Image (cartoon, rainbow, N blue to C red; front, side):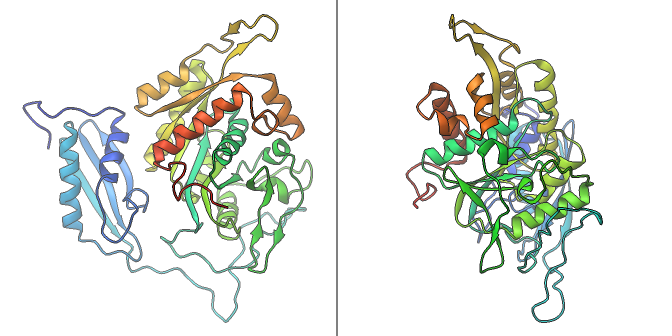
Length: 397
């Protein structure tokens, strides 16, 4: 399929990103969502110039596989390096969700440990969501913040990024799915069990113009969660289906660190628009973040960009900048992966203090230079998605 004369230019970015962008460029009749967002492009494998994948025809959609194969082949041919395409088809267009029998029957509860004292059941009513249906209607963009490893300030960045998006005019929710170490309630100074509304949905807690939901709201103080992947998967589904998020431009999701069972199960459960990666500058952190990016790419999830946290430290006495963890690792990671570098966040004691007392930097020091950094990153993030401030994407109430 490649140009044997070598005349077709090779695009920037990793091969996985090039393939995903090519697939996203295919227009589908009757929907404003692309094939990746609809879950139609799965099981991607790239071996040298050979691209293998599964085309999934989701419930409620009807496509002619041969025509879709021709359109995909045309896009791949434009990449210049694809020599062969191997496509398999999985037709799920006629499948339907299993609905409980009997009028008024409640959906089954998520799996939970038998001796989970203090765990409140998350199943508070509502109908099960059919496969292929948007489990969070009214939410335009679901953005996960991941890191690949702990200790890089991912949750702190998630909180302040969400606040920055709200500050520039968007309607924003923050979902803490770090089920083993939920820290968002502490960082925002929010506690108390969420209420249940007339629609039998959990109502997110609110503070600083954010709608907030966390596993921490449903646990006793200092209670540990000892769950495996399937249990985590069930709980996250309930967070999406049984929480009344209302109309949001962005739902920022704070993922647990790592690339293991928990983040993998959560990523599979969430209807993600894309992800943002947080890293510190040193090579060990950036290399692990690169592995997390690969995990997301293999699941067909686009990486919007990289944020480098703790980039440097400015001495408050002499105003000298010191690269405590080296510098530039995040920018290099973004460059190597062909994704945008969203910005640097310096190491600042106000970030740590604010998180400890429930008053994050964006709320406590909104006029600071550091707060402006977060606003700039938020604008870049919105720009990558095309969610321009002042359009219908921005919050209007």
